[in-house]
Length: 172
Image (cartoon, rainbow, N blue to C red):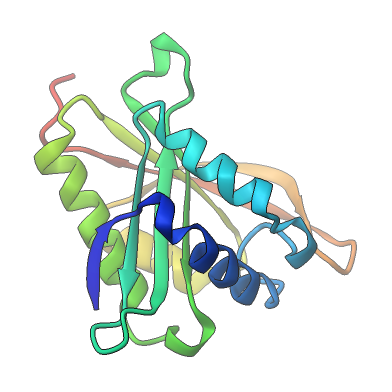
């Protein structure tokens, strides 16, 4: 897999990727009908405020198979934070270490090219034990539990776990 910065030319491939991932209710927080071209445009708009978006492409075909992004709040007092971290991996490529490689590239990029970023925040469903274990392995720590934040498709609620990663290059 090749990992690179996302570009405007990736929009249609990202739309298809997000649609494929959203078909699995545990894949991402959005449902398939919430994935629209406007949603993809909004992801790119978040980059204008110094967010980061990386894509992963298959080496042989160049097909877009993964994406990771986070954005700033847009508020000065939180200018050292990237939030709303989201990662998607095409269902055909899940369970093959692609997500971990995307995260490692993302965090490495921040550490070596974005010293003004002190922390990266993400939320995970409390039942997503596999992802939480990966986040911990990557250096994220749990900072809180948001009770009954997530309403699942079956109508039941579950807790969300707030996790953060601290950039070792940042000077607090």
